[in-house]
Image 1 (spheres, helix red, strand yellow):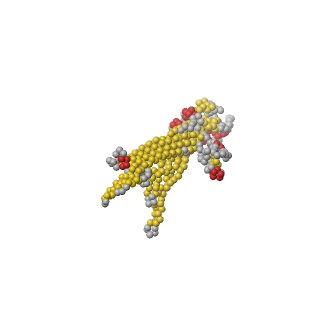
Image 2 (cartoon, helix red, strand yellow):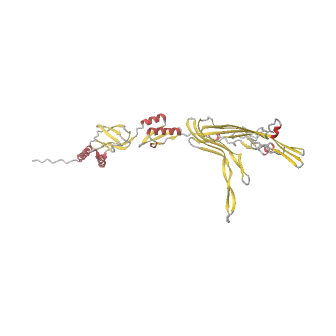
Image 3 (cartoon, helix red, strand yellow):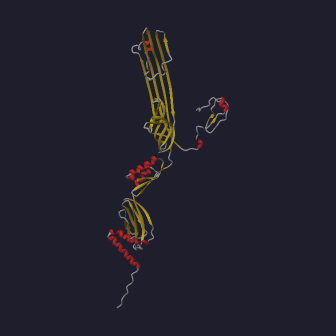
Length: 485
């Protein structure tokens, strides 16, 4: 009887048997997937493939077709909740995105060798959002990052970048899921020119007669005194002295005639100019502060008495101020938030008090604040005021003051008319930087007068001409000494 020796089991057949056993266990029990994957990764046979790992991005519910270089017998998906792989033929597979996240898919052949490996990133499906942004904002791109999105690219203005962020927020479903990294290219600069012009006309007319009479008859003295006030202006323009006329004795009559007319015109013009970057605020202030007494502070002495006392004051600001925030909406159109104020110290409504008769002045203020939209180079009346006030009063001795001619001796009358016209104009410009030689300063062209010109002709300066040019001293000129437009 012959005995046939058994052939030794080769290493390749043993490895193949182990691999098919593991694959069969994976097929029968899907719950063992992580364990088998870990064991397969640790097995030298599985990691011996030379295929490179590729990156693949998918949208939720989207699929991609994978053509394999050779026949595949098995596939490994690290997290089936994120993506799923289906082998439909020997060399073709489908990868389907299921949820937002990251996983990897590895394909193996019949020998357990790695055919292909893919790192899968499942993101939001941004094709619709991307198409909408591309149509409205051509220079802006959107990419998914995890559960959110990021906006990149450039915009022509901050408003365009903000609008793109709002569109993406509405389409994605939440501001916390949008990262706006849009760069604003070439932010515009806006120069604002504000003109505050005011003309005030005041007219006061006063006419009155003050009579005083004294009658002496022996030991009897009869006195008559009639002084009529000016109630429209609350005070006479001239005091009641120096114009009296007295008639003989024993009857003494004195009459004082008070007649005065006052007319005045006040013109106020302020033109502050300020430049700021679109979207930023700028402030301009030109003025000062004046003190106002607030009280007296005394230091106590060691004996409990009152020591040195010091007057305490506070300071109030006055002058010209301008604050504005420009935003360039589209080419040549500007949105402005403007606040302008012109204030000055005035004697009107002032207070006089204290032991030293300290006079506390008041502040006359013109202020305007608003938000408006103007094209570059256009002007708009931001605020305006036309005010006219007329007051007239007649004061006299009842009964006598109504006489046709003589009644004028027993009454006074004054007439007050105040007219104010105020206008605030704003003009914005989109500006660009220029070279220094294209700018002029207020002192360009100024040259002090020589001693002979100052002594003989009373000239203060020689020439106030164009910028960066000083004309030579010539013959006598009619206009000199001031800046003349």
